[in-house]
Length: 190
Length: 112
Image 1 (cartoon, rainbow over the protein chains, first blue to last red):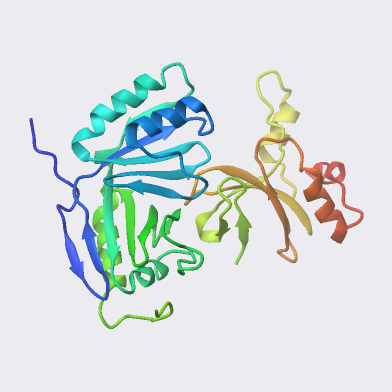
Image 2: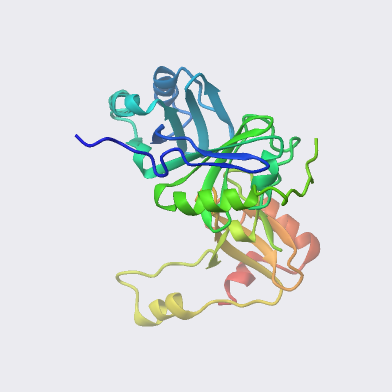
């Protein structure tokens, strides 16, 4: 059995914000009717969290559930537990019009932290990431420079971002460039 | 910059998050159609000066297709609506006719 490695194996950049590749994380895509009680209880059983409302990311301990579209959720779980949780979800949703896939190895996860973390994203996406319109627990699927990503605010000055694994190198470079010291805009100065 | 509100995720998405899908409410001719009807479906598109109904996809976002009503001359957006419909809902038609009293969906359909 080969050892699983994340896309950039924990690469890190220190600028006016810190960019870190978060290493191996379990990620499960669930598609189905989010209003159905079967989906709600399956998500609750797998993560201990309720299905979040539109564009929200719910989190507790090492679990998270993100609203990706009206019929899609992203479940964040510990990497080692992802295959087992995927199997349990699939079993719980048998007979439902639903799909559960373990996408842990198809994605890369980054964390963006620091006083001006919002600025790093603001420079790269067409999103208002000010504290008022992007408070903690908000999730947004959007564009980061030239690639599709999703990010959510896990704290006042801390974000998590996911992208396709094949684009991890590009995303890390572009985030690092955006966070380079001396390039602060101080638009969201706190 | 064109900004459309995605009716599925509620995001005020700007152009670079979207992908244009061309004219809306086209009847897709298929097996059994005669050649003229199929050619019309394949090649004829309206290019109105003024109100137009279009398909858009929130490509860098929730990934859903939706409809938008806008003016090709002023770039005014009258509204966006679900893709699961054959005609614009009343609210959209009202928003259009408030500015363009003579506009009607049937007339627009005859343009192409």
